[in-house]
Each structure stands twice: as structure tokens, then as C-alpha cells.
Amino acid sequence: MAFQIPLFSKPDPGPRLVEGDPPFLLVRRPRRRGWSLKVLPDGQVRLTGPRGLGPAEARRVVDGQRAWIRRRLLHYQDLRERFPPRRWESGGRLHLLGQDLVLETEEMPGRGGVEQRGEFLHVRLPPGLSPLDRGTWIQARLAAWCRARAAEALAQRVALFSARMGLKPKGLRVKDTRSLWGSSSRSGNLNFNWRLAMAPAAVMDYVVVHELCHLVRHDHSPAFWALVEKEMPDYKQHRTWLRKNGEGLYL
Ligand SMILES: [Zn+2]
Figure 1 (cartoon, protein in one colour):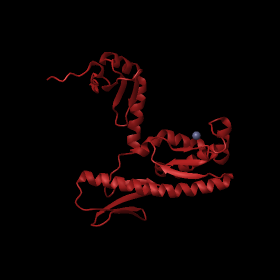
Figure 2 (cartoon, helix red, strand yellow):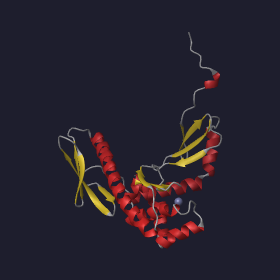
Figure 3 (tube, helix red, strand yellow):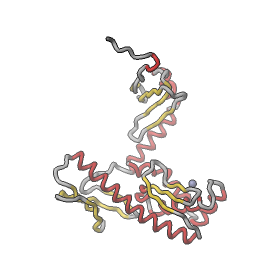
Figure 4 (cartoon, protein in one colour):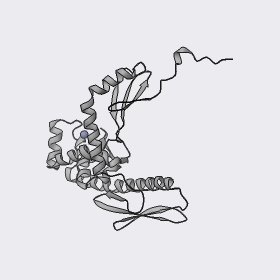
């Protein structure tokens, strides 16, 4: 007996590469109304639209956004030049909390671990991993280690600035959030992204001050920015650094 697929659950057309300049990936979603265009950090252009969006119409949409696409592509190219892909091996480098650290890996039976020895980050890993697993293993361990260091440093900076500003935050959490550097709740809890530990120290301080000021003003009004400026007169350069380079902390 033939299995009939009911009409109302017509399968998704699936992603489709549309050739041309620039080539792009067309993704169609049944419930989607309008379209959205994305340039990914690796340079891929992706257009998401409703099920009925055909390649010719999709091409017109993309062509209409050429200038924007070009700007995004240049932005990522520039980021890749300034933040070369990390090497998860001996000799790889990592900037953490104002220090330039060099990775040193060593295979050793027993429990693996990460330890800082001066400017070296020593990573012990179990023997016999495939090259790919080694990279993943080192990356995961280092991320956990960096996150713990970030939590310590952020707690210190929050204590310092809140004392100076006469504020009393309730709690502090360090998270792994995509493109959110910090947030604060009305109840007085602060959240920070651990990747700030890979930014220059003054940039991390700027985000700390920014979130602390939100305990006083929950908006981005001129009065809020005046508070930030009072505590950190040169905050604008740190805010600019984060806008320009923030994505590089994810590479
Ligand atoms: Zn804010």
C-alpha cells in the first residue's frame, strides 16, 4: 500500500544554494512571513523566508542588500585578521584578564586538567585522543577554566566598583551568552558573559560599571550615560571596542 503524504504536511523545500554573486543559502520556513538576511562569521550569506519564496525573488532581495552584505563581509574579514583562529595545541595563544598566555599541552594518564604556570597555560590531557577530539577536549577544558577565572575577576571588579559607587548588588552570575555582555535585573542581580575575560581589562570594567549603573537607572537615557561617565570618563572608547571587536571573542 502506498503511503500518501497528506497535502497539508507538504515537506519543507529544504535549504538551497542559489549561485551567483554573491551565492547565498535560501532557507524556507512554512510559518515565516517576511524574510531575514544574515551574513555568518565564515562569510556565508543566508536568506530565510516563507515557503513560497522562489530563487528568483530571493535573488532580487539579496541584490537589494548588496551594500549591507559587503559591509558585513568586510567586518568579518577584518575580525578574522585581527583575531586569527585559535590553535588548540602547544604554542596556541590566549589573551585572558590582561595576560597573554601560551598553551602547553601534555598527554598524561589520569585526570586531565588546566593549570597556569606564569605565562604558560599547561593542559594535561588523556593519551590516545584523535587529533579532532584533542582540539575539542582542550577547547572545552580551557573554556571551563577561563569561565572560572572570569567569575573570580568579575566578582572582584564588581566588589570594587560597587563599593566606590555606594551600590549593593544582590547577586552575580557569570554565563555563556551569545552577544550579551552583561545584564541586570530590577531585583539587583547582575549577569556577565565570561568571554569578557578575553577583552582588555578596561573593557571588562566598563561592562561592570554599565551594569552597576543600571541598578540606579533601568534605561539607556542621557541620565544613565551621565552616571557611567561620572564613574568612567573614557567609557566611550571601551564601548566602541566592544562593538567593533566583541564578536572576535567568540572565534
Ligand atoms: Zn545597558
